[in-house]
Amino acid sequence: MPDRKIGAGAGGPSIYVCAGPGGVGKTTVSAALALGLAVGGRRVAVVTIDPAKRLASALGLEHLGGEPQLSDPQRLLQGGVEVKGQLWAMTLDVKRTLDRLIGTLAPDSGAREEILGNRIYRDLSSALAGSQELSAVAKLYELHHEGGFDTIVLDTPPSRNALDFLDAPTRLERFLGGRAIAMFVAPGGLAARLIGRPTFLIFSIFARAAGIDLLGDLTAFFRSLTGTIEGMRERARGVGKLLRDPATTSFLIVTSPERDPAQEAIALGEHLVDEGMPFGGLIVNRVHVDGLGGHTLGEVKALLAPELGERLAERVASNLADFDVLVRRDQETIAHLRGALGDQRPILIPQLDEDVHDIDSLVKIAAHLAG
Image (cartoon, rainbow, N blue to C red; front, side, top):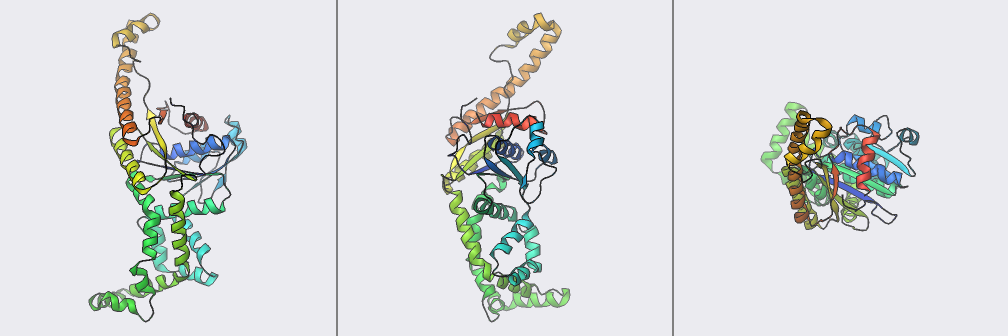
């Protein structure tokens, strides 16, 4: 295993963003990284995406909610883990995060209630495509500036959406400064005139038939946002700058040694470079390491026969030969990842014999992340 360490010492990044394909154990790696940093003495918050229920228990919590919760150090100690710092954990709650953002940026309580009560906002905050990415960057900004944490570990959506996550601050700033908002907030019913008479008639007919004034609701929604738009744009710029600051942020690409996830990881790494994001290293999870160890099938069978007998030795050797195929495949994929991403010392986490469901499993992964 390589001797790289994540989070060693007090001068490391204060934000770790774990990005990569889905189904490679990224959420578990994020939790294990946070645990390891907390054991080392840091006050850590880990924000997870769609975690398994058992992960909360492994972190010393009854459940994961939409705000950071402090893990019980006694429960962790019972699992054999002494946490010198603090471990806080939460899962991303899209609507709650956006509601909190509006509450922070609204100029007064009246404006806040007008926005939160708008039907368009309620629908958008719950179902808008990309809202998970937008709320993730909003929560990241909030925790970094207001949470008082030494380190934040952010789990992200799978890499098919990871590029959306990376681009979210830029897209938000462009949208808030774009013509669409300007059209709706302009006085004098300008939106209706700019939309065009045929479209306006369609909106009007829909309003009479369905009893829903969609154009009016949209106009009211965007006008209610007037007092928060500049604050949102400022936050979007702030998050974009934060994600590009190598002194503060480190992107960790988490993948497995299978072909498709590895290709997704390479594409993500190329995008990080293109966008000027600080790449902190590659983590390859679920690596097969138990095979024939460089021996032939016959040599392994001969070595095992005195202890196991001929028949059992043959079965065990045959099983190891099957694993050896996976070992060699993983080695080839890792070599390809090293060359493509320019990381000659990736962190390799071996395939565990059991699913990660308790503190012991997290500790094993944390040990590899800590070198």
